[in-house]
Length: 131
Image (tube, rainbow, N blue to C red; front, side):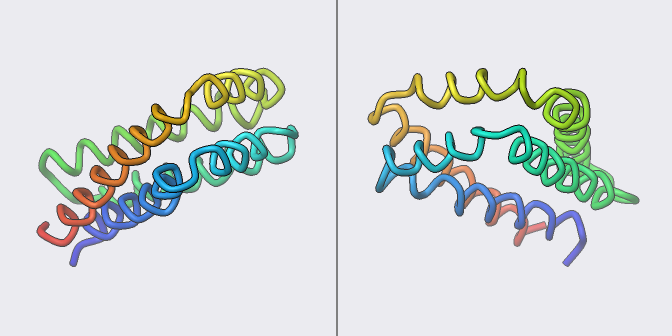
């Protein structure tokens, strides 16, 4: 199994772990997610985690070719840009945006996001195992 396949599987698992609760307990999950945005320290820590994930995705594509390698590489670049240019240096500006977005969703929308994301995460795990 290649490092690229492992990266895709890890991403699928992360999606499943973070989005399945939206299907079963959307209000509690939203409250927990909004709680991640309540301090600048938490926003910076989340930015560091996203930067590490982006760096892992870029590293995982080293020497790999094909459409999945390009997709994972571009996602890694996007994750690094968001975290290093927005979340880590300007957490105070990102907090209200993230909070407003998550609080703007209704229960039905949250469940739909959770269900769609769960299917997508499971599909990524399948793709990772078939590479």
